[in-house]
Image (cartoon, rainbow, N blue to C red; front, side, top):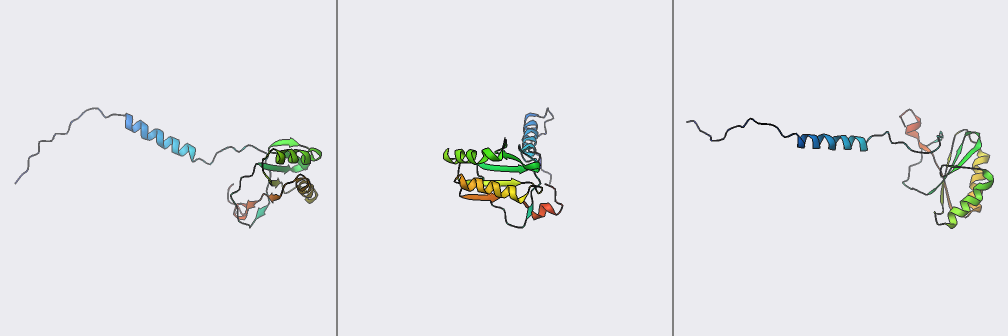
Amino acid sequence: MTFRTHCQISKGLVDAAPLVNVVFLLLLFFVLNSPSVMVPGVKVDLSPSAMGLTAMFPSLVVTAARDDLLFFNDQPITMDKLEQTLRDAVQQGHGHELIIKTDQQVSHGTEMQIMGAATRAGITTVNMAARPEAAATGAPN
């Protein structure tokens, strides 16, 4: 027994709009998930650490690069003006937490001067930035 159907396959133009929409969505997805996001700031070689990472985003960051160059929130600053700048930031309500990012070449004395200035400015929590140990063993940054 043979069945007859009344359906016919129409041969016409294919609408390109859905295909273009899908291509643009895929392009948007790949662009937003790309690891090539530029992060402004100063390049420092952080020391490796085996401690777990916490997801805190304080607004106060002091970066000490090689040759004892200091930056407060990516703005150049001198050690003499650091304490007053931190005190002003605390009074403006930017928080009582500070992250210190230091290059491996920065002396321990410079780190202690930054911590002392932060304590005198009224900052209650001082954290040292470090990169995870896995990144130090050869995994790309």
